[in-house]
Image 1 (cartoon, rainbow, N blue to C red):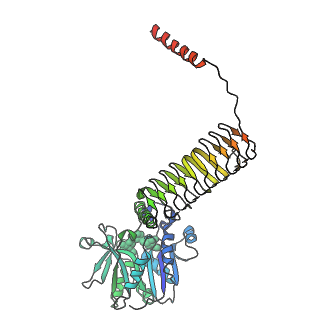
Image 2 (image 1 turned 180 degrees about the vertical axis):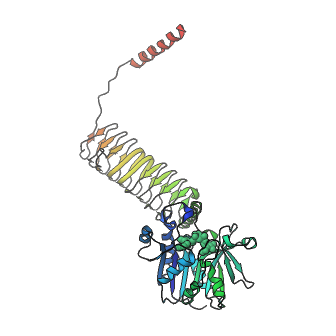
Image 3 (image 1 turned 30 degrees about the vertical axis):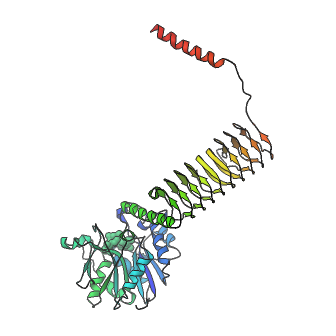
Length: 455
Ligand code: UD1
Ligand code: CA
């Protein structure tokens, strides 16, 4: 095989995305919290191309910012994928080698598939163009690949321009092309717009090249899910599923146990170490890291949290941004934690709120205890030392410090600092009236009896 030439990648991302019904450029819609364009860029970066050029529309400032530090070029009028490539090529004046064209709305294409497409241009006689096709059960909406007898490409027919006969074909254009840079600009000059959409189609290039005797080779993608495009929000949800599925599988291959993978929702930056057990229905928002052998019980919600090894979390626990959970910690049901660090082996086993708190090791934070961290204006810190026992249903009114080994009696509302190993109790004295309850019940029963006698 001939060695590949220098590579430049052009990503077409200027389209308005009308079918998304959104004010955002289509490629800024996210999968697992990361814009589509960034999925594509992170794969493209792995090819280490000489140049990456992203074609954007006028005024798409957020897109330009998301693409940085990569280069963008503006397509002045969004009149088709062919004219978008023309805009991209204007930034690559004089570039010699391979041009890999990718569609911004096809973000999950794998590095291996891209490499296969580039390599296909060099199989046998080097050819000027290769196109990435895929077989789809339902090809509706896609351009159909019309093949010659020798399986080279005769033409790509857009769905809207295809005859009934042509529509029956189910090998479609994924939109990815590999082109000989030195000839592309000349071919682009030959594009017209006399078609159903009045646009300049990149898909006309194979026919234009054929007039010069240049054949177009077809490279077939094996996994359809990674090369389907996104035109509507329904497509977006399907791509989301594909990306979730892939990431879950990667984690499982790396030693994570998922009892019901389809109910675990991951973020693109989620980190989960091996030996972790995830029960069903766990949500990972941005920036969550789970250490080795952590057991996450069902129905947990995490954002901005670090959970260290051997801890047990949930069921029904919520970790909000700034939660730093130590090793062998136990966080039980209906516990919410925010901007707090929890020391090794501490237990918050049920029904609690811990916010703006530094909790030491071996603390027992009993059922119903909370930090009172907000006065309606400002937030205040609670510092809990090592080995502190916070009894049930305690309010810790911040700012507050409980020194090592302090003991807070159940039901107390604590407003002053507690020294090491001291007891702090705040309760009103209990009043016990003997026989009161029996008398009370009798009086109530008599009232009910008198009423029924009258009626
Ligand atoms: C395109 C292909 C079709 C293929 C399908 C695969 C053409 C004419 N059609 O159709 O053969 O089966 O993709 O998903 O190429 N874009 C621009 N500028 C424009 C128009 C589009 O940059 O003026 C960009 C869009 O941002 C998008 C991509 O090109 O990322 C594809 O555009 P889209 O309108 O979605 O093309 P399809 O109708 O899906
Ligand atoms: Ca599309």
